[in-house]
Image 1 (tube, rainbow, N blue to C red):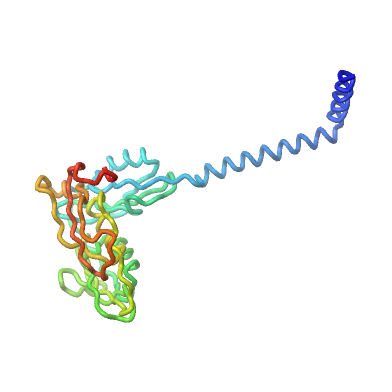
Image 2 (spheres, rainbow, N blue to C red; image 1 turned 120 degrees about the vertical axis):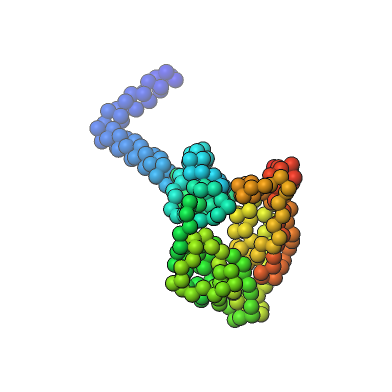
Length: 271
């Protein structure tokens, strides 16, 4: 009896499958399912959805070295600007965007600023009235660096009130040497809450400076180990000790940094 039922069931199934309407519907369903799978795979390849990588630190590398590191990190690099830093080797990378440690999609290009052989001059922008973040972005775009942050009482916190180079007010349109540090006088409202000092242990100098500026803080004394003798060494050294890590401080507070080339001086979690 079981065999008969099984045979009858098979015969019915064959009958249904032999019906051209049912057969076409099944083929259409399979085709739609296949197209959906292909579309999802293609979308994933195009957008690399969910596939992100950390940005390496390219500072003080040559462009060739940066290209090798970028390839291993699944990102690209493009030289978009140059500055002149007397003590830095010609052609090495001075700054990058996005910053080291940022998270980006695979294949993203990292824009590099390299050190040129001869100094060039750039036009000083008008930063007065800008926010601190806007001023930093404009300085980077012009090949200039953010220097000291000086705060004075004002109704708007981090609003630029004055721009100076080596203590001299620089007017918009003036020519300044590319790579110059521009000091900013910024407003500070009376009700502004304190800022928090970031932990920069394990970071190279330039990245640590950026992290402090992100929190409206200044770099104080910078002390290098005695075995750091060249500018290249100083660019490769990392912070192993700092002041006020994680503490609340007023805007413009100077944070002292201590740098080394000896990884043994770093805390265990940073080695």
